[in-house]
Image (cartoon, rainbow, N blue to C red; front, side):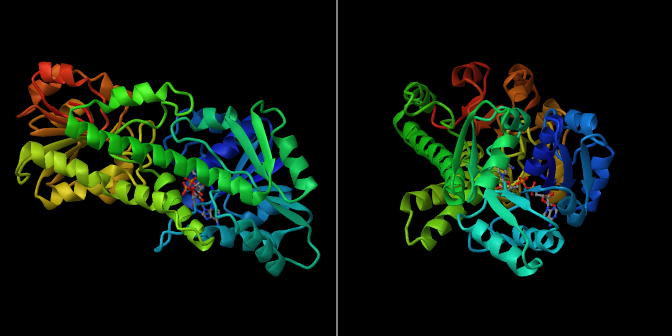
Length: 432
Ligand code: NAD
């Protein structure tokens, strides 16, 4: 098929590259001309394992980049909207990017188009896209608006896209249903075909449920700490029950990233506009917002006075295998440590460049190329992301390089007994 993908962010770029790899002819439209320049040269503006290889293989053959929506719309009968839907000041999803794209599509529509919402959008947005196109397009144009939410995870995005657990398709016409089922005909997973509202409710429900699991286990971790229980053992034991499942039951610094925090807040507003006060979700949101403070409290309990203390931090992105720092715990924790006049020594395998844009190097904030350099002369090591490489680190060497061997492990990556035996004062989450 001839496809247009609008937005070359984490979702759009993966979607464009993967569809091209599957043999479709893809035009990827990105507003940011610097990104387009980079992509045309075969390099990707984000860190996503395996993506650059697929880009290089398909560029100029099946995959083309442009800044012009007009080009893409005219050539492709199927258009995916993959732009951002950030949080607005009140917590709702801000749809200005989606609306702008809808107007641009309307101005360039030249025959039947299927416009597919891949971004995470509120339940009535397809109605608004429909209205916007009717208002700004020439009279008599034919088009459908469908929903096909994306469930990929940053860090394993290609695998998630190519072998999804399920494909959700929300349509209002047989024509749209046929096109999307044809497009995904070679995917062997379960396909759910429903109306657009249900399709988008599935996406939000998945994300708010995952957020709920994380806040739930973090609450259990708080109790574990008070009573001398071990939250990991609890998670393993309840996780074997298939009604519960072990995934997303890792106690830690709370959920972050570009999806869960904003989607939880947006869904509270969606529920409100439907007249529902989703109290459990409000509490999950409040509790998670306060989670970074709990880490700062642990650091202070360990060090007492933070002034002039050297604090090494491993992991700046919101999770491993990505350079995405949106809503990462590090962004909330570091300003608090700096406010107490601590000096910060940062190490992250891939997110340093992104982080430097917000925290430039200074006397109080320094970046290091290896974890060992970061801990040299440190009074405390704080772990904020569970990269596999951190788990394999030589802890004897770390202990030897620090002024005082104290670790606050915000992701429970080390066994407490081993850390204590190595001579660390070791604090983790919900374990003794
Ligand atoms: P992103 O911010 O990384 O990318 C959005 C891209 O769209 C940006 O590059 C931006 O410049 C571009 N853009 C904005 N307006 C444009 C326009 N008029 N024309 C062309 N390009 C334009 O966002 P993302 O992380 O890829 O997320 C996109 C959507 O997918 C969001 O709704 C998000 O909630 C959802 N989602 C994200 C993930 C994820 O893991 N990141 C997973 C599933 C769903």
